[in-house]
Length: 241
Image (tube, rainbow, N blue to C red; front, side):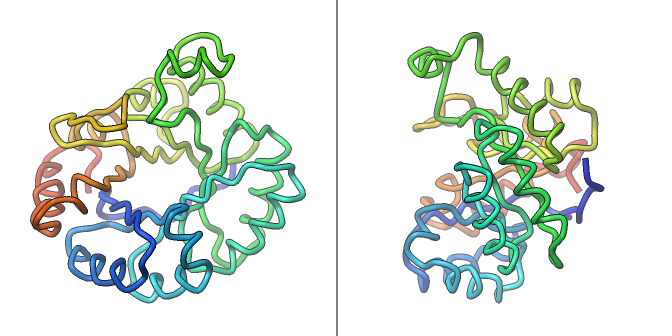
């Protein structure tokens, strides 16, 4: 695996999952003092494209581009050539795309000037065992996540995206080197369409490097107060800066 990349002083990243650029910029400016970075996903990227990423990069926070690349190796390598030209600190691909696809993406990232972290998505946090069975997978969600994580790390990926429920076992299995980025985190383990959740302090205490939180911040009447409360809840938690 490639050497580790920059650390993030604040583990709280906010998922800015909205298509409007002006609204996204206004939201991030309000939240900025309380965040370690922002996650931009498909909803934003399909609406605003690379220029939107560049505009958001101008705000100064690290950007986690949750692109979830998944295609044949040549196509993913071509997509990664576009990604590395953007102000992006981390980018995702699907571990299910296989070793050759992941190696192709990592080679492009490692050879670039910015050298973003390439993170492999294991099992989506919206899925549970019943969903996996319906797609032909055998075993538990944790077993599938571990299989995909092992494949990804052997292919050179710099970290893993997994649910909060898999953080502790990932740390036991793979040690402290891989970055563990954890979406689907919910204060008080509140659920919506996320099925495998913990609260932020539990996730960080279990070994998460970054917790990605969206609606528990962005859907609140006072998003800044919600972000501040989440960051404060991590004070004194082992693993939180």
